Image (cartoon, rainbow, N blue to C red; front, side, top):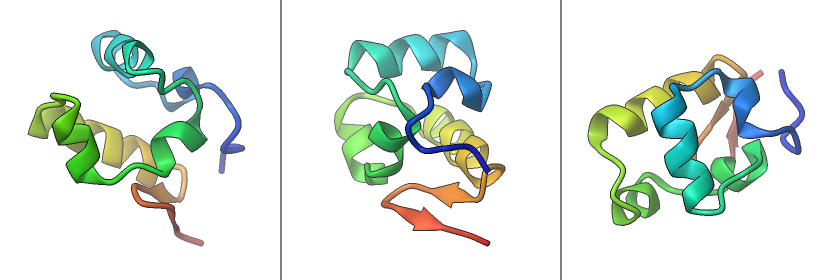
Length: 70
């Protein structure tokens, strides 16, 4: 599992999603991890982009809204 203070680049998301996250000042995994799906939708992320983000987080044992899996 990654440290939540690491940069979002460590999630290996597409460059388009990473750029979009950074444009919304979401730079660390923690910045992303604390968000809810609804908040990403409000920032104009598509369902497909949100699913990619969720999968990348889950591969690290995390999920949106501060959920953690062991």
